[in-house]
Image (cartoon, rainbow over all chains, first blue to last red; front, side, top):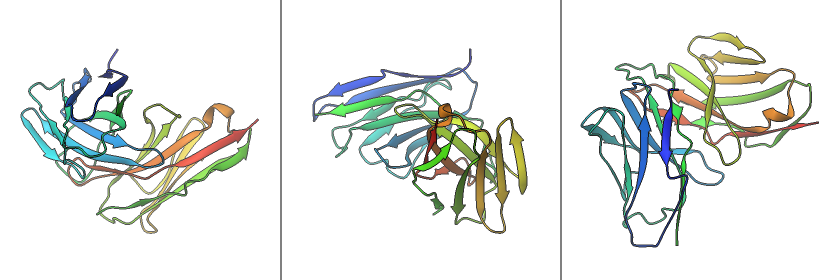
Length: 116
Length: 110
């Protein structure tokens, strides 16, 4: 079955530690995204990547880093510089578009990160 | 900066009724519009996409788009308790980026 997997489902870390969230897709999508969702708020874009070895900052990239070495994988590192890292992190993927029309994004199950 | 506005709700409807969810947006350039359903504690699930003015039907769901008035709506016919969730409106365009609204919480009362 095609889809997007994220691991782990729940993650607990101490303040000051970096943590890496995994995202893998087998949909053969070129584009991948990371969002953050806080209670009662919408989705905020952290980083996105349209092709391998290329990625762009989203609206709230500070304190995060990503890599895109393989088409299938787009891991997100939450660094100790991120002031409020506790949130629900969602990875998504879509076909790549080069114009104004956006393609549907499909989401993984998410990782709930708690930092204490 | 694109903005997407949704009433946070909750919108309560009795089982079997039509639920009407609305979304307005500020960006006239947007070409694609999406509705996602998000159950509590889960990730968003795409349920409808619409690109042209008018109505698009899929089962019990109908998406309506009016670009001149800058609104998009989602109708759910014969609402079921299992439809109780938060519905996110999203705008696509601008080279890959999608902007999401904060969602409307729907409660279907048995």
